[in-house]
Length: 546
Image 1: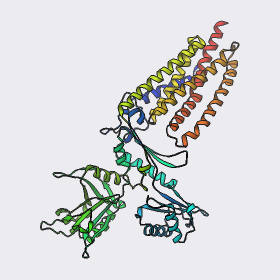
Image 2: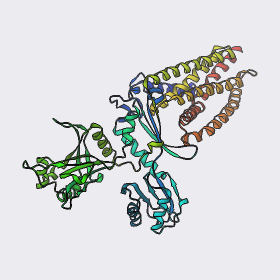
Image 3: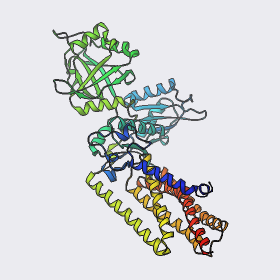
Image 4: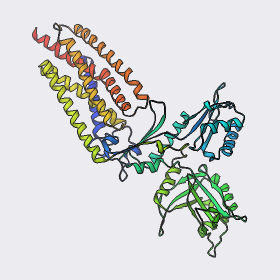
């Protein structure tokens, strides 16, 4: 029992090293093995299916990255009356309706937020490139709000940025982008961005997923007596209960997505169908024909079931005889499902992803000012190989330097093994949480090797380069002195690196995270374990010399 008590740090290091080995090598042993981590669709990142469970970012596995600002203009210090958290008032609704009329924008492009605290002011956001700061200020002034142009800025609120990240993340998940990630970041000048990465995917594929804002609307359309073509919305996103997968239409060209209406929204849907005449056939076969003119809708004829994505019509077709009958007699309510047909698979897939994401993007991304990065898998494999070679060289160089310094394998070998175990624990950590590794993280690993061996040398020098250690108390005093130096250096490193983890400075963030975790593993686990190893070596040697 005394042996276990005296060497529990060494035992803990061995147990954690074995656990890290299992997490690193055994399939399915990670804590992040959800659908995103395990799904491997055609062309997706397959790095997790290799020898290890490590996930790789685009620099080591190929793929694409988009770093784009969010389109929007925000007025702050708008004197909106406070409400409870999450509540919407008649005042905010009135502001939004009036701005839609004044600025000529879509209702989804205006968002007024009342403050949740007394003595606070609200915000108004407009997500349109065509609205300037001066125009928004003037529109609010016309409504009687004391807002100057200095209260209006480019960009959106933090709440909108968080919602953007959440919705894009859901889109990536629904598209089965293995390893795809999204986060909010800020430049040194204070401009906010959304950073989206997709290992194993080309830039066009990633852009097609996130460029679509995901605003899907379904209309009934008909030619009115005055010669205009009327569109009336009959389905909103809140009315939809289920969405099928995009698939090819049997026996014809085109693709389709099935849409199921919520039970409590069926009556309202059927009212819209009847109001637009989609339950009244206009052909001898009992079906409904549609001739939709996309360039000039007023020249359209017949009656149409129309679906739009981001205000662009993607399909406008008639209704089959069977569906018309279900609409007419009300039996559609028994199985409230219809299909949206499109001409291309991409359109059908975008509609599917947009509806499955749960909600549309609150604002569009500004791709004109976006930064895109794309790396071919072959070049990424070369980086991966070079990174491995660099790591091996670093280990060999450190091992040779340690041996030349002490000339005693009994001191040098435990030091090297302890340093390598620190790297193993760090690899187990990033594997367990499925943290995608990039070149900046490899640099962090090499830094951890260097600082780890440096700390072990401090411990060894403090204990070995002085008069003999006769008792355990003398050893503990010297080890404690060395550990205070190591602890202070570790605290300095963590404090210096911490700002890099929250400032969104790209690759520097990953480097800082790996370095901080490595330092914590060293101070809490490997340095104390090396102290126990060295204590056994030194005290055993003193006992033999006596």
